[in-house]
Image (cartoon, rainbow, N blue to C red; front, top):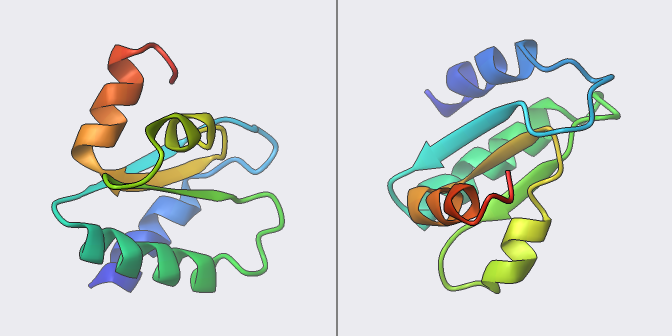
Length: 88
C-alpha cells in the first residue's frame, strides 16, 4: 500500500522546482519512517527529489529548516507548526 501511494506522489513532482511539492502526513512516526524508506527506495533514480523526515521528538527548528526539499513527509503536528510559524 505504501508503495502504490508513494508512486502516485512521486509522479506529480516537477524535479526542476526546488520547493516542497508533496506533503505526506502520517498518524505515527513508525508509519512516517516506513513511508520515508519506501520513498527513498522508489526515487533512487530521481536525482532532484529530496526528503525531510519531520516528526516529534526531534529538533523542531532543524525539522522546519529541512522543509526545503520537494517531498516532505512527517507527523501532522510538526507540519502544522511549520505552517503556523510561516516557514512553509
